[in-house]
Image (cartoon, rainbow, N blue to C red; front, side, top):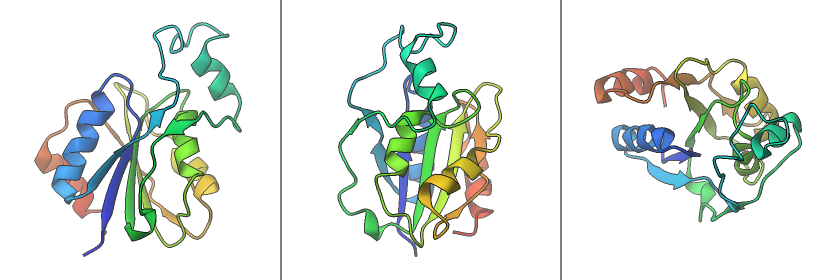
Length: 160
């Protein structure tokens, strides 16, 4: 049986809740991707062209600092990576996590939380960040409320 990790970034708590459910269903460890400087309401104002999140998302090379680390990342075979969708992709702080570890030989399963936006081509971007020696699943958009049976159907289909 493979060792699994659910790494997630959550601002409002929605992604954290879904990540906890996935960890429960999969018997996985959980890791919160936590920005060194927490996001404020002003930082998250996507209508303001000078807000922190707008500036970060405009720069594809932006890597906001994060706190904490996964102690022994090498023990994990499968890594679920969760986040809210921002500007049609994963937030830059998630990119920091993705470029901080060696994903060689690992399966990466992205999931996003959104009321309506799809996961889009996020898997392609994640593949470019973790390298070709990792296998990145297409991923899935999950709403804020997802049932355990639905999660089991999804994860069983992943062939982990």
